[in-house]
Amino acid sequence: MHKQLITCSLVVLASVVISRAQIVSVDEPAVCYQCHTDMEELPSGDKIHAPVEAGECSGCHNPHASQHASLLLEESKTLCLTCHDDKADDLASPSPHISGTTSSCRECHQPHSSAHSSLLNEEQPLLCQKCHAQVAKWTADTVVHEPVASGECQSCHNVHAAGGEKLLIESLPSLCFGCHTADADFRKIHNSGQIEKSNC
Image (cartoon, rainbow, N blue to C red):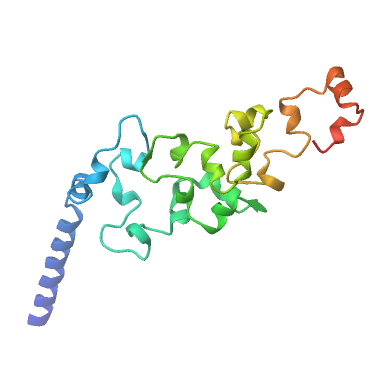
């Protein structure tokens, strides 16, 4: 009976300790900024990742321990897909962007803040040129296709994945006809009656 009383008392005590531990309020991100002072002052005008803006560091990081770099809750790509699940199908498609399948999202995106849209490391096409050196040569040519000149790679390419080759958002020539109307003048210039079946 005495042992049962001690055991019961220990269970009650443990329950109290656990319940108190569960209701401890942590001033996040202030507690994180005690060490990570570089994160406290994000430059004004930056695009800020939603968890960072909400001050929810623990949304992505485990403050105690992790099997992943930077104390991330999951491997980088898996973690990103927990919120950005609309990209999961893209990355599982037959034609994924190589960085999306084998590497970290951080090759193209900043996880905390960026001066560029979509938290990109750099603006397009500078970012694309890091892997696709020919883009720099194209932009230096005398006559440059308008989307290329404007750095709007996503006008023609799905940057994460696509069903067809070269990450095109549509097959050719349908993609081209999104901007170019196949009227009589267009056909005359191209000297073709079968332009709808052409490989632009």
